[in-house]
Amino acid sequence: MKRKRWIAMSLACAMIAGALPAANVAAEESEYSNHLDISLAYWDVESNLTATADDKVLQTIEDKFNVTFVPQNISWDDYEQKLQLWAASGSLPDLFMGAERTKSTFATWATQGLLTEIPSDLSDYPYLEDYMDSTELQTCQVDGKTYCIFRQTYYDQAETVQDRVIAYRWDLAQEAGITEEPETWEEFREMMLAIIEADPEGKSVQGLTAKGYSLLAGEFFPYSSMLAANDGVTFYWVDNGDGTYVPAYFAGDELGADMLPTFQLLRDMYTEGSIEKDIAVTTSTQALEKFLQGSNAAILIDGSATNIYNDVGQYWEEIYGNDFFDDVKFLTVMQDVNGELAYPVFDYAWSESYISSAVDEEKLDRILAIYDYLCSPEGELLAKCGIEGETYGYDEDGNITYEGYGTGNPDDTYKSIDVFQYLVYWTPEDDEVYPRTYPDEYYEVNEGLVELASTVTVPEYNYDCTSAYLSMNGDVSLTVADDMLTIMTGTDDVESMWNDIIAGYQADGLDDVIEQVNAAVK
Image (tube, rainbow, N blue to C red; front, side, top):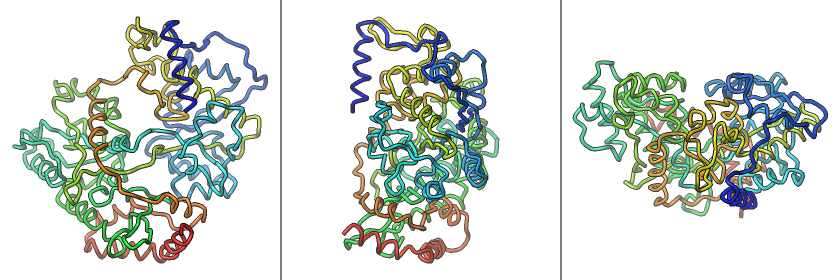
């Protein structure tokens, strides 16, 4: 990609000159004469954009573009509800983040005129234009027009294995008589039940908790279908064996039969307690706290092993007197119902940026210019590393280093980095050039999972079917996490409950959708 070549050239210059172009933190006259306020909804944005008055990263960006960011806070537990409320009341922020493009909500917002169309010609914003030159672009479109900007997380399918990760108390497992790390769900269940029965710390320890019950779908659906965990309207379509394509969620000799082993596994684990009874009402914050305090023997998290460091790992030794990795292990890539390794196949960008239709052309230009800057080598460096000489420098080989600057983690000094380094994308394409901000062991967990996942053959699916369905603006939207919760926590026969759910989809037009999509791709 062009962008990667530009960044590579900048890094080559850095090797010679000893530094990348550093952001000018002195007050500079902006090329924009008219000052604009931009309301921004981002996770914990209030604390990260208003925590300190001398945040030089925030100052640099606001001065450069003559704007003031007005935070509108969302959290991991309430962002979907707030976005729906703002949309219904016509009060969406100018710029906001969400994970709606895979759902019918996205098309509804676009057709209702709540979103600004992203221009098809982005030549005035060359770095952003290069970033948007991706297969992910089609997931951002409704009727051929682009209404959001994907936030890239992964660059290879095997990397998506990191999106759902389980950490578990290996120290408690050993005290309970477990001698081998689990590689199958049956072994994991045995370990959870052994820990619960032994209760080594006397805390009435429970089984698996999660930062939101919906994460269970991604972790457990690969037990019988690697492709079934995608919900909303961008689900994967597979050949059902007779040349007819169906959503992977409904594959099988009988409609949906392939999912039965997964639903039965979840029901059994919930009933026996290897999945905690309170999982449906546990917030992400509560789940992390429960695992940290020893109330649960395992936790399912999203976003890779490094995500557990800030909330749990860094406090572990203070509480338990041991290094985190002395007591905790991460579950490997698990075996499916046939004994083969399997992981959830997700797309490469789980969320996206939206611009409200309330913004005028001037504000749209300013937002796109900011995004273009954050995609540039200079902007990426500022957003990722902060200010040269204060939060980063260069070693004798010309490599970026945090050692000897600040705390060794730039966002400790400039809290706005927690917003700007992720505003356009989660992971820069050249992420390996930046120093690690977490202990190496966490990265090694991720790398080990990806290495295993790279040996797994991804089942074939037909994205033309997905594209055809999106163009139809169909009404059938999959609610896989809610279906899963209904069956997992239910008391009626698993197969009959699943058949009832399928019948509900059929009443909404599933059979017609399957017929129309197959006609469109043949």
